[in-house]
Image 1 (spheres, rainbow, N blue to C red):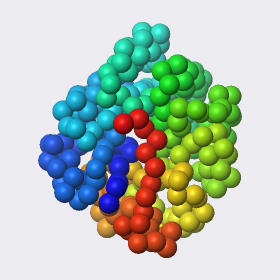
Image 2 (cartoon, rainbow, N blue to C red; image 1 turned 180 degrees about the vertical axis):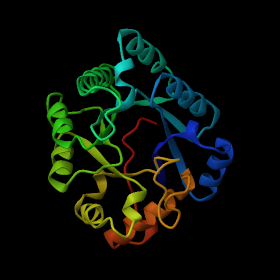
Image 3 (cartoon, rainbow, N blue to C red; image 1 turned 30 degrees about the vertical axis):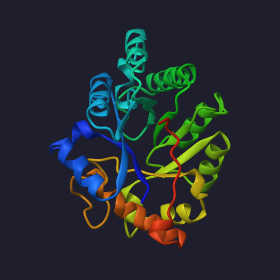
Image 4 (cartoon, rainbow, N blue to C red; image 1 turned 120 degrees about the vertical axis):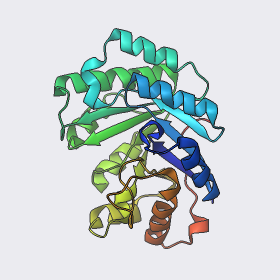
Length: 247
């Protein structure tokens, strides 16, 4: 298999990350993207990327911490992005479900990180929860995304997915695609083009069936891949997905 876990929070694992990555490699996972949610976890993502050859880093500030994104934080992000193991900016975006930062701050942070990704010619990784129309509105202001755009753990509908694909996006699905009640997401997977689809664990969150509710880890990407292959009606070994991140 040629599988990449395109979104993992290795710093939040309760176990040793090296052991988890070893199991993932044994399971056929050839790459893992370690994703930051603030400056400290972004720094740790880079550490993982420099410690393990199969790991690359995406760095950014999650919308929960958008209020902390000032000029100094953006300068620090840009400094961190100078590491050659950094392959993207994120996860950034909007979260109108938790609303842990004011919506105005979320939008300002989102726009600033979109502009940083464009300036650095790096893919952008987007978090969108209960903010679909607002996310689309902001993304349209910056299209097309010539250097890559990833809608992480996608929860929108097919028209939104197709609109984002027109902007240059890849649509990423995680463990919920394996849930019995995820019929909308499963139908979406059936209709999306494979060359615009990604899979991720979002570990340690969103463990796939039959581990729902338990801590997730990168080797469980195989369960997500199996479900996607089943929905596409192809053998698992024929599931070839793109890699929008730089080598």
